[in-house]
Image (cartoon, rainbow, N blue to C red; front, side, top):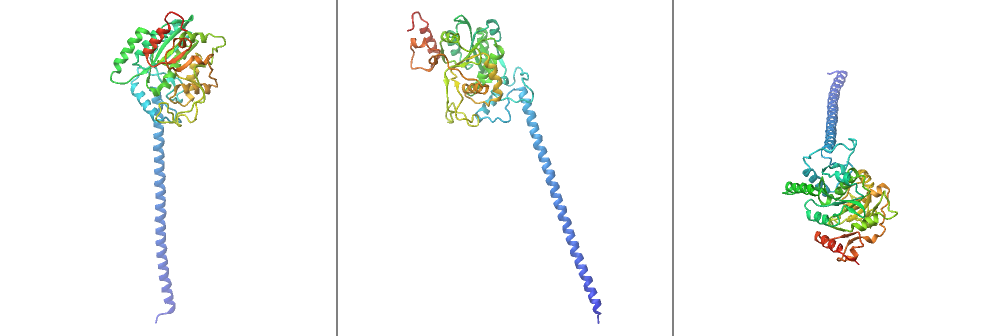
Length: 391
């Protein structure tokens, strides 16, 4: 017969073995759980570090490339600026048409500055004619934006209101502003332009893409040329190539008592003009490019006159104005940003837009009219200048 105490001892010993085994299993599982948890944590930290490093490296490379690109092609956008897709197409076209550039622009600002596509000094001149202002010292410079291929418009202006370099006893200079064209005959067209300039010495060309959406660039390049190549002129006028200009009346207006010699911008004034949001319109501007519903007061782009101290101010202030493709309203934004007011002309009725037909008496009194063709300009000008009183 087994001793009861022995039985108890055996049971106790078995229980100890079972408990020890359970404890060892628990310790084993607990150890592996901690190990796996630690391993997951290590892997997560390692993955996050590599991922962050990769993103930072990518960002750093992007910034490095962006700065390098701005130094070589001078076409750059500030990081905060978002450009409408249509503008991105134009920027791509600019890069293609200006590569490789004949020269590289010098740095015009600290290397950490960023400029958008409306900043004129992102581009450089391929034709300058800088000597014209030095030899003539003009009172008034007429700057005409025109398409490179539109020689008919240039010839019509040369025969009419751009023909005389002396008007009302003042030196007047007429110049044509061109960008780069595209197409199969680019090289032939460029050669023809060089020959045209050798004959007339009145072409200014820069390496932006000459398109309708780039009119703001074209206008700002005009301002840059005036500020840097012709700073001694008293006044300038940006006037479209399809315009009738009564140059005599313009010179009479500019010599009237009280006409400001500085900070002066005048023409056909536009007040509280709504921003066109219809994507089907050629004047469409997205809220992304211009968030306000109306434009500041501006002068209609067909032809506006300004004192020649303003171009340099426009170029400088443009660095802080988000670009959009309505060039005359953009100049209005420059005026607003500068804290300046657009001035109504002495006789607002002299700046006309569209007309219903030619009338010699009426054309003798105006300064501007929009025409339908270069043939109209030559025809109307010839009739206006024939002998005899117009009215």
